[in-house]
Length: 256
Image (cartoon, rainbow, N blue to C red; front, top):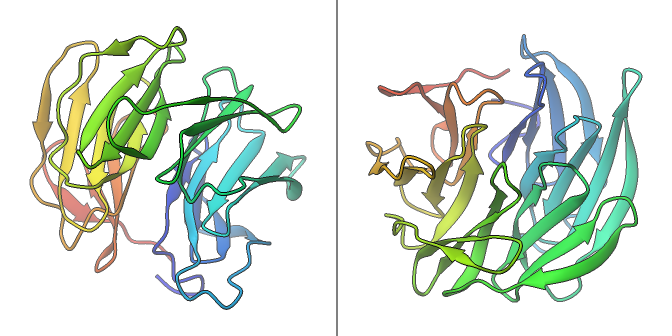
């Protein structure tokens, strides 16, 4: 992997025709053949060597890409008519962000970070409309189930929680990772959660109730992302780049 030094998060476009891959401050939009279509810039590194993009998400209709940076902002990018243009910027205040997720209808954006409750933003108005507390620990990951419920991963203690619109908490397994940082939900509501600095990945079928820990990913499993159709699971390894789980084994994904 070259150019953007892509060791940050990934996001598949809902059509399956594009992949967003982040470096520290830039985002490459790649076609199915791996060719780079656009490079998005706007997140600032400043003088902070640890500042970086930590999560990406496409809206369900594919019209927006949201990028989350430790500079405490979300940047929205509008995709239309063969172009990708910068749109609104969301200031997250004191939240040190770690993860974001669009609601299934695309009207809301959830942002999680360890320094506060999960923030819920209106996409159309770009206004914060409410917050959701993690039932246990400090939130790191957030994702939506198909019914709009939130999946929240947290640490101290390491925990998973499903919180519905009424605030009710659903039973859930404990993740293997001590700091469950990466979180992704497939179209069939299968949750994958990975650790911030280890090689553990837990997969949980919300409706079936089964869960298991996958074989260790090579190097690490810093971020996790389901393919747009749930056919494969991808993780970002600091050492080996992007790895793909096909249901049987891990392999390295070749990217330009």
